[in-house]
Amino acid sequence: MAGPARRRLAPYLMILPGALWMLAFFLLPLALMVSLSLQTGNLVDGFRQTFHWQNYTDGLSIYGDKFARSLWYALLATLACAVLAYPAAYWIAMHGGRHKSTYLFLVLLPYFVPFVLRIVSWKLVLTDHGPVLGPLRDHGLLPADLHVLDTGFAVVSGLAYNFLPFMVLPVYVALERIDPRVVEAAYDLYASRFQAFRHVILPLSLPGVFAGVIMTFVPMSADYVNAEVLGGPRNTMIGNVIQSEYFANSAYPLASALSFTLMAILLVGIFIYARALGTRDVLEAARR
Image 1 (tube, one colour):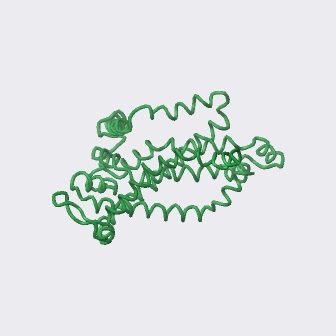
Image 2 (spheres, helix red, strand yellow):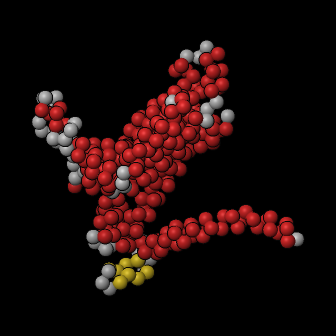
Image 3 (spheres, one colour):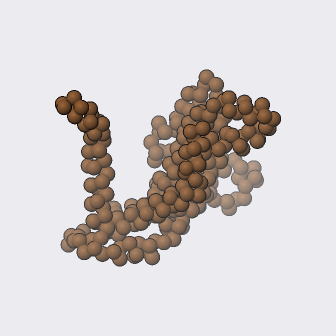
């Protein structure tokens, strides 16, 4: 009995450290934040549990435009990442040869620099008299009153720049898994390069695109550093509001309610996205 019992318990013992880690550093803090989001009070008198659901309605009514702006910026940046990442991942997977690891290392190389420093560097690039806009303005190729910083374009470009590898890597993995014989079979059946890409390569790479969109859109929606450094007061995202409510105003219940509202919106959006794309079709394409 001892031998079979150990074999039955072995899988559970293997996942026990990970389960305890998730319980201690994810589930318990999440439960505490849920409780905090329903409390009332202030930092001086303390907070008490009153099941004040109005924190959620107040957050939506006051900062609804910030939620909409955050989702819109994240959507634009995700689309930009997809447009930029897919060709790069395709070229590395299909034409990288024995240098694939080198090209992937170059994609990840900026991540050896801290996140904030990358954003500050991007700010220096986008300044009016920086290395890019300055010479163009001096040669009359750009209007003298054109400003890129403190605009939505600057925030979206910063988001796309900082989260681009999160799109490249899953798309690359999906493309790398495609059997070359399947593509050759399409050519043998007189398919053009475009037809082979449309009917063979693109459907088989959808799992990577699906994962890349989620891995970029979700953190972009909650990001606040890009909007703080590259945007102005008119480009505030919901992450900036949550950060301000927590650390500047000490409005912990409202900030927690805003956080869970954003989480709920993202979960609903991901569910709709998965249903629209067809998760089952994506997984079936990955198994072929």
